[in-house]
Length: 337
Ligand code: NAD
Ligand code: WQD
Image (cartoon, rainbow, N blue to C red; front, top):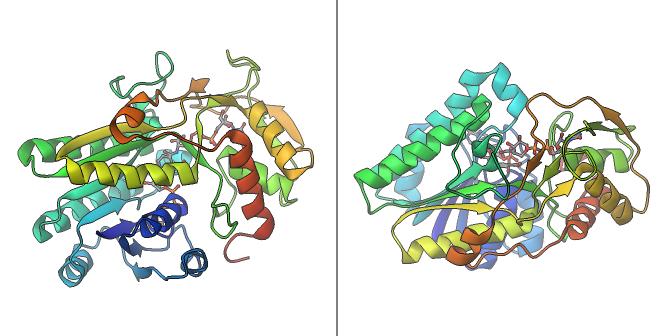
């Protein structure tokens, strides 16, 4: 198929584009480079021995999208483009709704006008808010606690309305848990701008000496060791889930909603210990108060993805840390370092 990958130079988009191309699809990347580097394309070319086309553009730009669709003739769109920092979304809600909701709406309108009706959307486990129990099933109630999460719920609802109005659409709402790790080549990985807000990139920067120590946000949760528990999933497993979701939608019209996680939870201390093994050095840390808005435990019920897509995460926590470390060591200052 010929695919448009929005947000294609970003962390998850770049890994997914590599797997899509390796599965035989033709890929065009569309990104405004607001949170990524164009150099990722050189790295993808080194992995693939083939260079994906990058078109610099914004999903809020209808005229540019119309021109792209008229020119390219896509079969489907995989939509990663958007803003994802929870704290920033609280400070700048209008910006988040503009990129994540209006941007998606504009993209869907351009698709409808061009007659492209196969869409894969990056949703998030954040739509479950603070779940009543774990593991989290897809039919659990959704309740966002911040504008970022609400933007994902709104888009999920828009997509459901779209299918109701026109059942010929084929749409996947993929709810990612905590993506971490990097491609095994060490050529592409997560390259956050500024101070990382997520755990794994922060640990990476401590291990490589860019930051003195990790701050562990709370050790008084009701979890086995007191620190927060999450479902970390290797980004290459997550990327493979997109290839499988696309295959599923080719065979079946309608709406697919699945969690992409491993079905296992690990604590902050588990991650620190696994990373220290991978890097062969201790990760210095201090215990600090809980981070506002954090929950104790979050992990997926991964059975629907297995049943519907044949999806199973193959890479364990040690592999996630080893691959994250390889990327960090080979690129201590990211793509532009
Ligand atoms: P990322 O920031 O690395 O990638 C997003 C890409 O979109 C960036 O390259 C950025 O430049 C681009 N972009 C942003 N706004 C744009 C716009 N208006 N037009 C065109 N391009 C734009 O983030 P990621 O971690 O790869 O996340 C990809 C998607 O997955 C996002 O929608 C995010 O909300 C979702 N998601 C991420 C996580 C996570 O923990 N990383 C978890 C769940 C869901
Ligand atoms: C993981 C654990 C922290 C940083 C966020 C978004 C979510 C999704 C994924 C997009 C928690 C602890 C963290 C640090 C720490 N993104 N921690 N010190 O909060 O589960 O999810 O990213 O959809 O929407 O909310 O991920 O990596 O920030 O935190 O102790 O410096 O690590 O308290 O227990 P989170 P995270």
